[in-house]
Image (tube, rainbow, N blue to C red; front, side, top):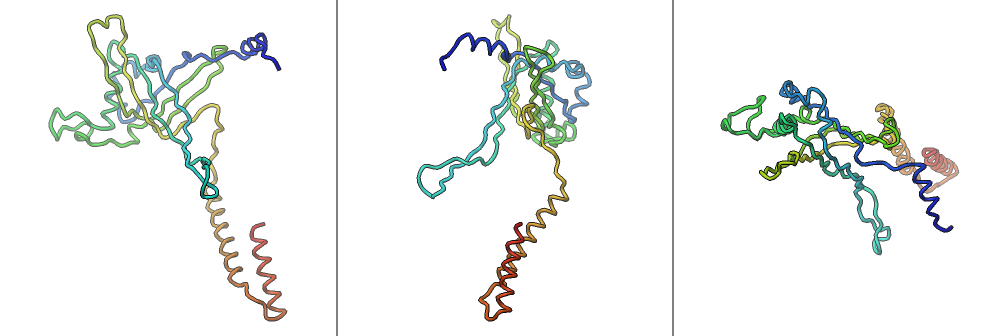
Length: 253
């Protein structure tokens, strides 16, 4: 079939294309710094989402290992897990430096880096270079990507167990009069949920345990049956061996 530019243009116009500038990102304030953010207007108002200038949504990096079915020759690759890369984002800094205060205080709740008061200087009972509790500094970040065709159509990335691993540097220069101050931040996270994937369901823990116990019971039954198989010496022995073999077969039905 020959390529037809009219058909190509028609189909692209029919379905439309997504734009990469229609998004905003929301961050739930970590519980460990909620008290310190009471006077931070940009956090309290929820306006932080308007200051996320860019975010690079992560690739789906499936970890693989080489496998040689015959022990030699060209290997095939088998999946063995999923890697979650760092999530980089850039935030504009507001005139009251609320954005900068938020991320610097957040980083301090992870590792108390301020030793200006010596080794006994405490912030929320955390001494210099002591680590905070993950339950208090890890949170959720959601990136909403909207369609150019309709605001009701959106794609969502949700990052859980998220916290910054790098609050980047800020470049200051007298000649940068027309530039907006920005703060790069790199996040790590424990799990990722996207709109296009199937939502998992919670399995019945008890049925799972029972299923495992049932499987072990089956293996034990088979082992006992195999152990009992021996050369028949008479008709009765032959009948017993047939029974053992039937037990093995029925165990896997």
